[in-house]
Image 1 (cartoon, rainbow, N blue to C red):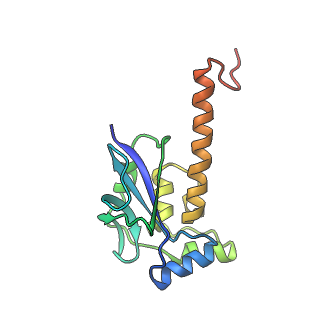
Image 2: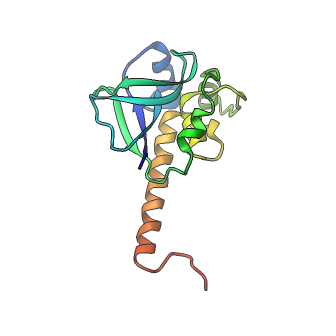
Length: 166
């Protein structure tokens, strides 16, 4: 069975990485969607899908997940078709400035048909308004959804789902 993970880049990187980190008040400047049968390990190479300015848009790429530059989180609640939703956007162009402007000035505009990394991953995960998510915001959303998912699973395991009427 394939599982989904998101790798978050926290390295110093390029000037664009530092601008994203500053504008979003986060140590993270980029993220990658990973689909694998087993959890990827830091220090190993993983097949990643994302939107990248360096690579000119949405692409699939093998990336070495260097331990001092990457953090990996499993998305236990990833909906069916997560990878395929992102993969359907292969070749579409990259968009950085709408995300930076959104964070600095609450601009919150979407450039249709153009993607930045966390927007693409949020879209693949079916999160509402994916263009609102900078990489750090996406990590917080993944953690929040994971907590909710775990609480719901525990409540069903106890035989008393919260909010069940009837």
